[in-house]
Image 1 (tube, one colour):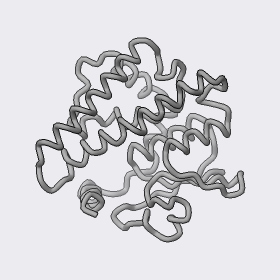
Image 2: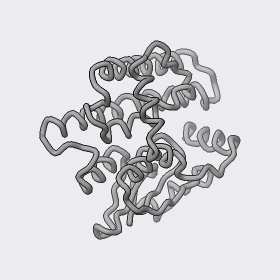
Image 3: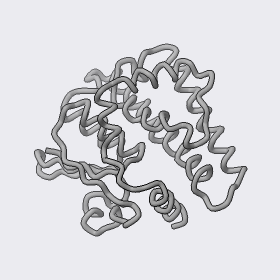
Image 4: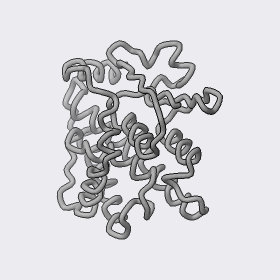
Length: 220
């Protein structure tokens, strides 16, 4: 059994989708940002960075893993799925996983903050992060013109990237003209495990609470 500590965010959805794809049993612990549960002392023992997601693998000596990319790698290696075993294939998956972790996530995350949450409308930062996010989307589109999935076969690289790209509108970034990226998005949206993973955890907070919590995170 795996304990999943998460919230309804792209990074949280990466792990819930992976768990659904792998068919691993897991228990959901939804953390409430508005109550700062991610900063609680007990949770910091699991994730010292005080963010989501994190897991505890009860079948492996209560082993804790934090950082979404590290969790995806752990689950893929634990099960022998969603990542090839050969050196080149494994490297391709890791390269595109790192592209998401180091590029798409941080840039789109900043676009989200300045476009949606920041108390002042700072046009410079908004345009800077939106343009960079769009550029990264174009890199994905070029790659997906050559292959069906980011690493050739469906893998944790796709699982890491899709939850971010699917909410491009929230960052004010368009995918117009990126036909290969759109094809890939539609294919992932049809996967039953992806659909189930996007429902984890259940969204209990209303929009006002979510915005208030996000603003408090930005201003700290």
